[in-house]
Length: 152
Length: 152
Image (cartoon, rainbow over all chains, first blue to last red; front, side):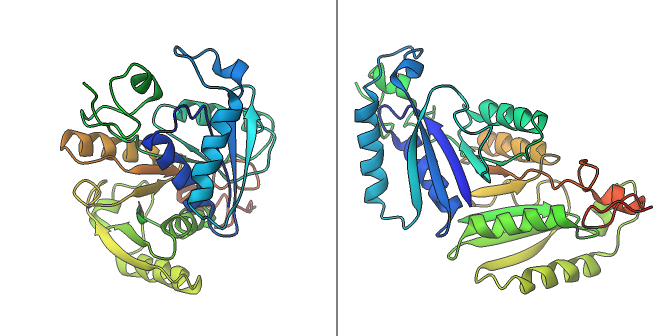
């Protein structure tokens, strides 16, 4: 299956890892995973500073390589919320509970353009020790680490 | 991955087949698929007559067996919308665009009970020749066949 997933992935935390792992599981051995990585310009709307694209890409590639999936994958720069998800021919998009509205919007636009809708796979967010979601913002604020451990 | 899917599956149409195929793809070789099949009593709220449980189960089992998946699967009777999806330990539920609200509700109840949420995989509904969804109701009405061909 051809799968798309996207994000800023900074820093790469356990929620991102679940998102990526599920994307590869879903794609399966003969599948393909396209990972949209926000550009520095697009990511600059975030409330906290973001590391440069090249560094984020390198961390992402290192994580994926370490999993030894025998599945094709590619990282593409994401200049907006949709990237190539409107025009491309693919099967499923993997999102979190936070980002599912983007997938719903992608399907709406695809339908308007006469393209078929894609499957939407929503992962359940990974919880930190305090039972709240792990998020980059919380990590940046120093509340938790990338695994969701509470920092004091 | 442990996957759950549910329905009445009467008659088994191309939309159901996509739902089942995706469930097995998602489960993967070492996974497990639990198929909840509505009981005759529970299915009797439908607007059209439903064939008996045993017949629906037999069609379902025949379709799955024909796919030669080397994946464990089981059909369980579904007495209500949730079946064992609240209490069970599983990873993902596969739903259609029509039935996604049930999955959202399942996650809400699981969370309230202190259980972890599961992934929700929403397939895009299979379209009939007239670009509307294939559904059992439309088939029963004689508008389309199980593959979505328009009947005159």
